[in-house]
Amino acid sequence: MSTLQGRKLNQCGLCECLMAAINTRGVCKDCWDKDDELYDKARSSMKFGEKFIPAVLAQKTGVDIAHIQRWASLGRFGN
Image 1 (cartoon, rainbow, N blue to C red):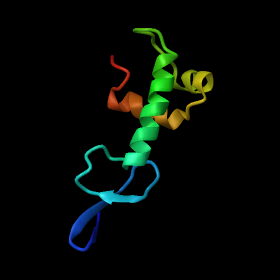
Image 2 (cartoon, rainbow, N blue to C red):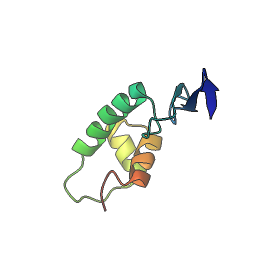
Image 3 (cartoon, rainbow, N blue to C red):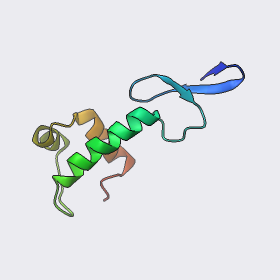
Image 4 (cartoon, rainbow, N blue to C red):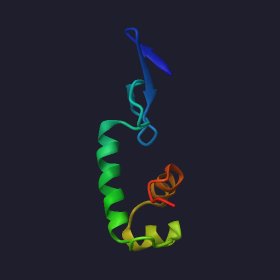
């Protein structure tokens, strides 16, 4: 964590730009918006309750597997 004029800063977990440490998402606004778009794309290609293999979903949707694995670890696909 860095400081700039007394403000605490963190790095975005995706693009590594500096952002306010109060951001609890772990990613900057630009990456969050892009991440939401990619999530919607991946999620819309799945059927309700469908189990998936991250590599297959990535290939099927063109979404980077790192994003899919991150969402799965955050529980965004449900259990």
